[in-house]
Image 1 (spheres, rainbow, N blue to C red):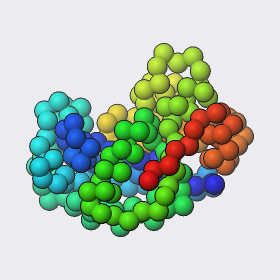
Image 2: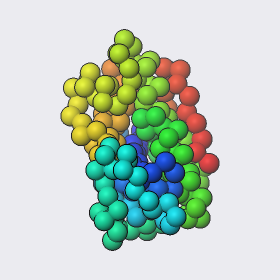
Image 3: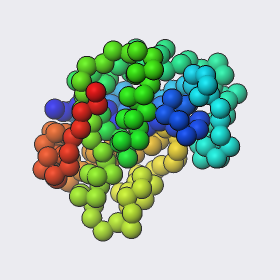
Length: 187
C-alpha cells in the first residue's frame, strides 16, 4: 500500500466525543494529495470546553459555535480514509476518537487499518529523550505548531515519510512490518 492518511484530533474536554478540531494529511506514492483542517462542533452534552484543554490548543466554544459537526465533516474525509493506512502519533488516542465519532453518528466505514508513529519512531529513531510529537519533530527538523491539529497531522506524516526514505521502503505496510510495529484494525 502506497497511501497513508495522517490524522490528529483536538478535544474540548476529556471525552472522545468532544472532538473540536481535526487535521488530515494524505500522501500517495510519496506525494501529498490532500491537506485540510476542520473546526468541529462537538455534540451535546460533550460540548463543554475545559479550560485545561483550551490552554493547550487555544480553541474555544465560540470558535466552533458555527462549525459543522463530525457528521457533516465525515463525507469530506471518508474517501481519504478508505483504502489507506491511517497513521497518528499516539494512534490509540486519535483512532479511539475516530471510532467513537463514527459510532455516535452512525457513519459507515469499512474495516480499516492504522499504525502509530510513536511506536514507529521508537524503532526508527532510537536514542531520543522521549517520543512525544514535538520531540520527534524537533529531532527530525520539522516545524511544528504543537496542538494545532493540522500541524500535528503534518508532523506525523513527515515522520512516516522520513522513516520510509531512511529505510528505502516506500510501501507503508512493509515499513511498519520491517520495523516490527503492529498495524491494527480500526473497526
